[in-house]
Amino acid sequence: MILFVKHIILSLLLLQAMGTSFAQDEFEEIRRQMVEGQIISRGITDPATLDAMFKVPRHEFVPANAKRYAYRDGPLSIGAGQTISQPYIVAFMTEELQLKPQHKVLEIGTGSGYQAAVLAEIVEQVYTIEIVESLGRRAENTLKQLEYDGVHVRIGDGYVGWPEEAPFDAIIVTARVKEIPQPLLDQLAEGGRMIIPVGKSNWNAQLVLVRKNNGKIKKKKRMAVSFVPFTRKQ
Image (cartoon, rainbow, N blue to C red; front, side):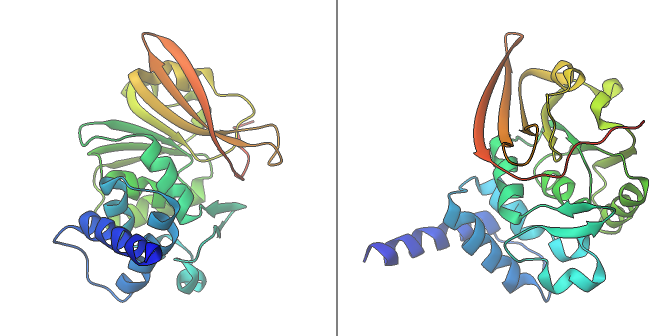
């Protein structure tokens, strides 16, 4: 009985997140299973996050030979030594930001462009920086083809952020840092939130939630994670 009730609750949450309109494509059912089985079942409840995870065609952000694996419960290689994160981690990090439509978001580590697309389903303006030019250009093209016009891509060193567009209501970093870059803290708006993997190695990396209130920075560890290391221009 308890399991039956849990299944009903999960299904209702998914239906609430989907709303009345969604894209029809061959991956729709697989994407629904991903949201229900990998994300809702692990405790993600924010309707905006769930809706975004259901809408974004994850298979469009992976190499052609990996499309059939796009909705599996794990990261995938996208080339250049980089990965597209596990769907649950994307959803978790998104939910932690507590996004509103009017928020301006900075992403460090565009990668495939998938996380930027998820953010763009919730907010109007996303600024994303990728240090690997081949990945950044490919992501930019994919985002344009899918008409994510509110996503702005820059090729460059994410450590310095995007100062001319600061402050940002939310910042998300998708590469592991040893210490949180001061420029990103400076560019976080008052009342803003940042989610970032921190650790000297993947053996001790943690997702850290950063909040800025009255000019003061508060940090909270959220979960152990594994991310590719943050890289800078030499």
